[in-house]
Length: 493
Image 1: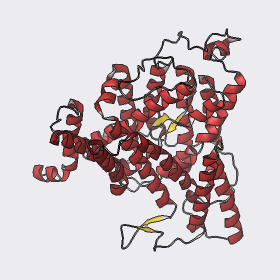
Image 2: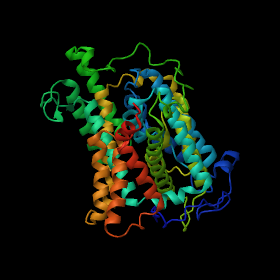
Image 3: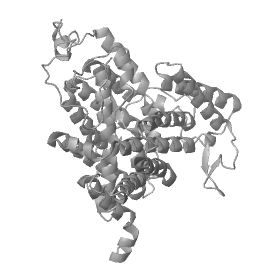
């Protein structure tokens, strides 16, 4: 199947009109549902869409386990969110955004809480804000993406930030997520002597970390065997082993942390929408939040984390589904981008962090999905999961954390797109990648990459090459790094 480039300037990604036809769109519709979703026209069947939608859900259902873990920390006031409410919010936002992608965009794409977005919220926002203020930033970044799509500034931003830096951002976020997973599993600790250590004392000990290792290896084996739903199957294996070990060994609940592998009193429970609507839209910009500069940088980071990956995913999966024409135009692309941007606001209002299109949508396409009906099926299953949140609470953190490491390893694949022999791009890309996990800050990695790229270009006499946008960003990030001395100079505490 012909693939298109998603690099800036190489793809005419303007959406084809909804009545335009790719080579396969020639068959007459059988009924109203067929006509609306163009099932026959795109060479698909109702069975293909149903199977594809279910497969996509199986491939990304792990988000119901991981997102509550990523958002399980305390805000600046020490407030933690209820796990059941987080699971409900995650399922609700995923259901709404995914169904909208299907009904509005008519594309076989599913969306849920972006791990990179949730990781950024947890690491760089919440320690300095309340949860309500953090969700307010999600709403703002979602609105910002929508405005970028509507105004046409998307192309300018895509052309403004060098492609190697964007790839490096993805890599850095992957490393960052993997580190979070290793730490939550008890595999990596903040060492008393060195910065980090293997286990709490330089050695691994205890059943939970062993089960984490077994789960991780199981998922890796399933992935290399190209098993569909490998992550979910691996999590199921790890959970079953955790159940057996916990029952046989009679472990204390404290060794597992928040989630203990025990059967709940009832697997069915009314959804708890306690987080819905708890949004402080502009509080993070004030003195009781992060401050205007830090909050603005955080919003920019969230836009980077959610926008560029989503665009590449939408075009890539759409092309794999045979929906793009020879010029790379895809029906419903602008609508899909609009819904994906709105997903940031939807997730913020729901209390689940920003939603973004998942690359796991490709698993449904692999099962024959070609239309938005598959997305409606995926969204319907997420809706059903609103009533089964106790089941998600049975999976221990050590098991679920294995998926974070796996996702991190997948994001490392972007490294192949960077020319590491070209030092002009390799150095800023390297700093972008490593400073995210090393400083435990996504923003620091992005800032270091942008500044270094511009300084190196200027040092080579190519100061015009980065373009005005990159120099503006450099100025913003210089202020970000110098915020402490600037505050001291201004007498701001």
